[in-house]
Length: 333
Length: 307
Image: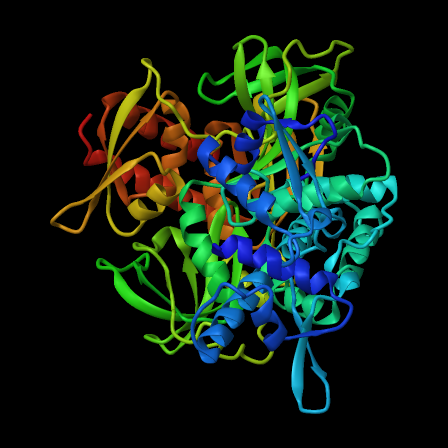
């Protein structure tokens, strides 16, 4: 009997039973074909339990009988999909949410797909899918390769090892990291974790990981570390990716030419207000968290955008432009 | 697997389960053999193969799917939070109450486990632009074409076109509309912040929407055509590497003196010239000459506007 057959039989048996089933009884029924010692059977059963648990099927162990014996059962009410009793607008929302990662090329696509199937099953009336707008997250091909082990390490609290090249380093270095968190900004993935080499919590941009990410295989059911108390992912993320957030921010005004006035991209700044001028140009006021990045972004519009205020940002722009002209002198042509 | 009464053709099943025909038939054989250990016919999961169609009759205990697993709940919580932050959904709206119902489908332990992981995964999606969003959503919901005025980046002009909307896509920091473009007679991704105007038409799409799993593999991947230029740049310091991270299709070579040479292809030298201004004196244009001139000209022009 192959493994899958055995797992299905075990599930059906433990679902169907009225009273918890001992390992002894399992040996005479589901495991009838298995040869070997008691210990080997127990190990096989433990592995099967673990595998089912990973699929979302939790086998419950309860004491039975007078001799500290253990019985196993899968409680039906915990096994089956309960009737979620979703209202139509709740169903639409949940479907849109579950669809986000469908076909995303991340480890979330598989569970997204099965979640959608379950939602469809639960529907009292068939929902016309075309009426639910599709919103999808699309990543890059390498995401799938790296995110799988990282999310695994994060969930089970296992150490990760990988080769990493910091932005200002010339050579990649082997790192051993306790993964605490994961975030994405503008399509870039970052993992936050304690690096054993540097002895502190760092952000690792996934683009700079040069090898596969290996998850510690030893003691798979025991976490390798504890989460530091008060770990705050948002705080770590803001360090790496500053956002407009308060008094330290700069308020900037930029004038956009009529040609590109409709472009509503905002870089990483928040739009405070926008005013259209008689000549068709638009002046937008921003709350800026990262002045360097903001100036870079405005320069991207070339002659179609001009920083009007504050003087510090204008000077930053001027400095870059002067630098270009000095540098350009050395280029051919 | 959601099973229909008319049975499913083997090919469709193979596609859905991503299995080969042999693998599928082998798995179905396993199912057929299963049931309670005393093999009473009433307990078997029965399947019939009629011609090329599979009919499955499940014993009672498999008639309803498994409860929501940890992974599935995690995806819903993470995606839900991201879309709430993006203001695609309101915090006090149906998504909030739907997610609460999902929570109730999990045991206390399971919920604790999932929440513990969900709060350590944060995906930021930009708030969607109200002006266009409503109209585009309308096109998607009603399955009607949209009339777009779009700033084409590589051509540096605004063009008008009619498109058949398929989906909104968030990728690499930008919102896109994935649609069938009637002018190009192909699928296109339109960056929302480059759409000048959008209008809902009363016309229906000419093409049937493709399979749900169709998604452009890499959004915004630039496929240079015949009219594109090969550009070679030299950078001093780490800036070169940052450029490569932003432009995955660029090629990147470290030189002996510590500088980096970057090679890429683009049609829009004007935009590239503007993009390069941020690097100040930390780069040189090696070729084409046209680009070097454009960079100098732009820098001078903008500098003059600032004086």
